[in-house]
Picture 1: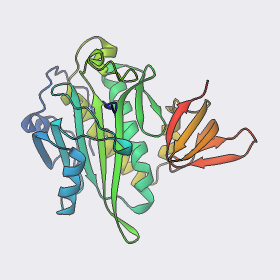
Picture 2: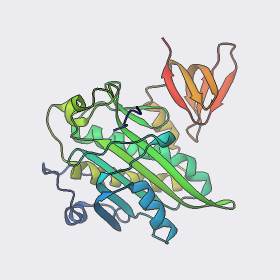
Picture 3: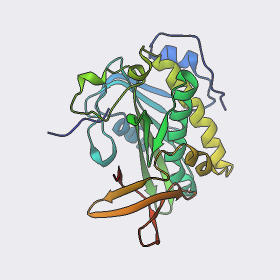
Length: 273
């Protein structure tokens, strides 16, 4: 949850416990590679930073870094991210994509979380461009993609996912835009089931983009941003217009008031009223 500044097949197990021990995760995994190498700590500063360290030391693709609590979790723009013991899923996954596939990692991560939430809970999750998962217009998940380049190729990439599972949003009244899966369902859900489903979807979708499948076409179907009048801010630059569509790399195509089309690569979206 953001803190305000001042070859596997997904399955639906019958478990209800929220056991995220390494042993339970290994028993439940359905993936071939993703998550089979697991680096777990009850508490760490940041799964994203730890994944960077492990990747630098040569950790293989598919290595999963997972913590029950992060003391310095972060999201986009270095914003702090709250991780609550028993209530959150906070993990990072090391990948070794081709350069052409790097922009697609955000889309596959969004879809993996969205598909898993819908499959396990039936909740109509949507995507706010570029990388927030929404439940009833409130943020339930944030995604962070980092990468390390080596001349003209990707050395490694890190997919970081922070998901509010069994948090009570009422404990954080200064973050009214946030929610959790349990808050929307009215009862707790298994973090283990969510984790293994997300990893299975990530692996399946990752293989798809390597086979040149057009993931942006599926991604755009769940984008809550499209067709709406928005402002996009990136640094000191602000673009306004109607969100029209996305290109194959997930960049937003914005129709300005004068009819011209702007391609937006990144930024903070707000709805215009």
